[in-house]
Length: 108
Image (tube, rainbow, N blue to C red):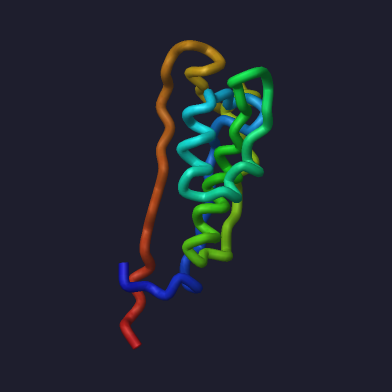
């Protein structure tokens, strides 16, 4: 994008939270193979079953790219049925939206 990473502001929107996103050993291995520190985002739930902190993993990936202005990541779609759909909770889909924009500032 030809932008100074110090000018990037990231907001992690609603998503399934770390107490509800259960994954298998394969997902854990996929993350820690490329980043050993990502293991901190996983909590053993049962043999071969892990709870994954997706907002934490997103935050870590952004920080590894040099982004320091990171907000959000606290709204859990699974635990808030009044505001959010959750396929894992309800077994049916809904719709959500995401935004990305770039300020049009003149080049210096």
